[in-house]
Length: 458
Ligand SMILES: Cc1ncc(COP(=O)(O)O)c(C=O)c1O
Image 1 (tube, rainbow, N blue to C red):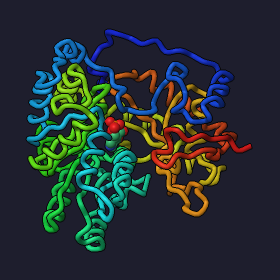
Image 2 (spheres, rainbow, N blue to C red):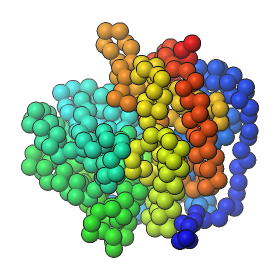
Image 3 (cartoon, rainbow, N blue to C red):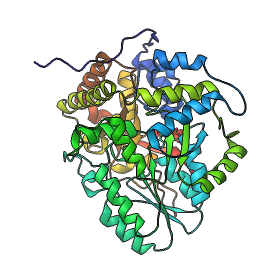
Image 4 (spheres, helix red, strand yellow):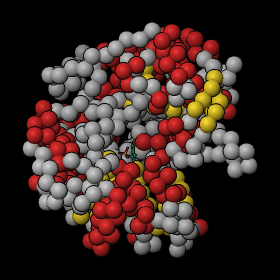
């Protein structure tokens, strides 16, 4: 047996977990209107709601907090973050924001507006919402193999260049930008190949349209390129990441993912005049350009995290531990997205809960069932999150399938915690057809999954 890939850290500070009973959780669910975003974190045993902002920071990051310079203007923390972003991206203009969606809001306020069209492999929900909020249209062009959950293709997050070309022709003169989401969160956390980034850029260049990265998980994507794309095995993750950024006009970034921080983000741009406009908007809503909605200590935590995340012992463990969890869940007979992505395991709830019609929200049913029985919190990525509505009736239009995402916070849970999750899925399998479906009781217009209220169908 080869030696196992171990967590490349030891634990210095711990947070106790609190157990609850199934009866308590049933009542908690009822009070939360069957939406796990309304559940108090103390009532969750294993929290796989998101990998966003949930990382355990390192001793080096905690030490960096003490160096935080809280000056309103010209903070040293800003310049340390700027140096880290320069080293990584080579993008000369840094606009710090309190998290990723604030960077998106600024970018799309500048590039968007009625009549404009944006293309992507798959837009994340906040990205789509920020585009649509300006009156523009967001079109997903993900590679067709993404729809085949069984297929073990290496880069199922790629953009489909053929569809992209067709969209460029159909919307000639209206396409404002293309945004590649790396890794492709809404399509199973799948990576995008370097060749796909290069090809997308070449195609866009022929139309004079800029390419941007939604770079939240750039390090996981770079490591997948190293592992899977021929010709890159001997390059460092940093080198690969640098090439990814070298191909784009800019990037939006959430420091809550691959900066191993609990808060933060930025917009990084190549064009100085666009950056100037972005800073003007930043000052109105986020803050002065050298802090942009973050305290100095948060800027420093991000700066340290951006370097740590490219440590290849960490990336090897990160990708291997997600794959271990995926293999375990799959071995229990649960249909998952193959191969597993970097930050999460995605379960096909529509296929697994085959006693429910798509209108009965199988994703929501699995999320609530897993919480009620085992205290595990996950999130639906499907009908509710995408929130497509019938304009006549206002009813949700079922997604092609409801996935449930088991997002794995960075450096937080041990293999035994994940073993609990795997075994829970095994047990739930035996009773899965007893889980009730759900109907939406209230649905907000934007990002409905956060605040929608549901009721079980008797
Ligand atoms: C791909 C992607 N883009 C953008 C965002 C938004 O980032 P934030 O939550 O920091 O606003 C997220 C957050 O989950 C994401 O996964």
